[in-house]
Amino acid sequence: MHNEIYLPRLIDKLVALKLESFGAICIEGAKWCGKTWTSRHHSKSAIYLGDPSRNFQNRELMKLEPKTALIGEVPRLIDEWQEVPSVWDIVRHEVDNRGKKGQFILTGSSTPVQKGILHSGAGRISTIKMRPMSLFESKDSSGQVSLQSLFDGTFEAKATPEIDLQTLIELTIRGGWPGSLGLSYEQYSLIPKEYISSIINHDIYRLEGINRNSKKMQNLLRSLARNESTTASISTLRKDITEYENDNLDNDTISTYLTLFERLFLIDNQKAFSTNIRSSTRIKQSDKRHFVDPSLAIAILGASNDDLLNDLNTFGFMFEALCERDLRIYAESLGGKLYHYQDYKNREIDAIVQLEDGRWGAFEIKLGADAIDNAASSLIGIRDALEAEDAKIPDVLAVICGLSNFAYQREDGVYVVPITALRP
Image (cartoon, rainbow, N blue to C red; front, side, top):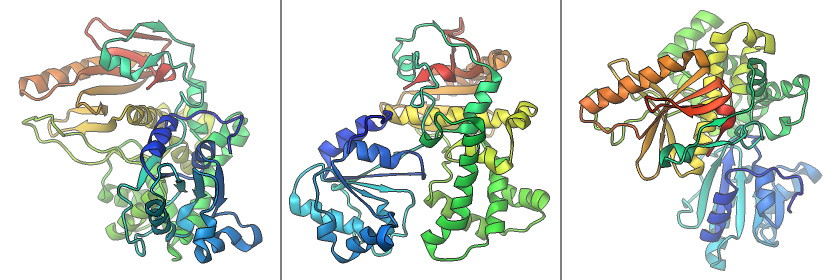
């Protein structure tokens, strides 16, 4: 099952570790993000439940003769397990019977309704979330600066490769889809558009068996794209749809559609940070809205290369989403999590990385080098205010930037790191 052209992913180490620790693992995430390729890399046999060959023969075999479908060299890959939701219980039961580790790898690009799944799989099946490629994984980041080094004090200043605005826009339009690597602009710009079309016209019906109003879903998706990298509430989305789409969606309908998008791993919001900070100031709890990859927001808006070049305000939000996508991937590969910060004193931090040991870093994201001074001042101001409140202060202050060719630490202690030089 090993593929000679497989491009390593940051979750490979975690996949290997969990196969040694559990009877089965489930790799879930957005379509086309590379789950099957990674799973094939770690497996020795496979059955593909989404394969339409012979009238979906594999799917029927799993339904009628699950014991037969599970036979094969281990780890055995069961791709798109949600096509037959009973697979979860079947695998859990088989893991119990065999009493061995590393028996199965399940992959899923949607979360089925839990009806009919009787057991959680706790202790037998461990779930791993996979996302599109970061710039480091797609080899568009030099990886000269590690996120870990900012926390550990091992950071070293470095000159980094030249980068221009046109390249950053192209990387954001292309997104982190493995199938887009090596394609021309004309080719890779089509992939996110096809992704959205597939979700609206096929996947939502297959997930639910209900014909939803595709026009209303598209209107909501456009509103989400206009509000990418913001904390827009459902009420804000509703007003936006009324204003821009001349349509009316009630709050319940919006909530239902958002849940569907989450189950399909189409959206990947950024939670608010508050744990262990002990600030006396009330902290807002709104999620920051994101698609799983900024290329989807760009495709939904129909924005071209030239459009973004001539509208840097819009591209600024998309660039922020790109950086936060990568920071999330890097943080999770270190066992950490990504958040954002907002409080009722109008203090905001674009991204918070919290490591497993509780240390946390505050990151501002800026496209141009001319905004670094203000971003650094903002971070220092928030840190000093938190300290005055006897709250837990960040261990790291950093500005992640786009148009810079040097990674360094300023005299005030704030790190400056180009996103195209970062790795975990």
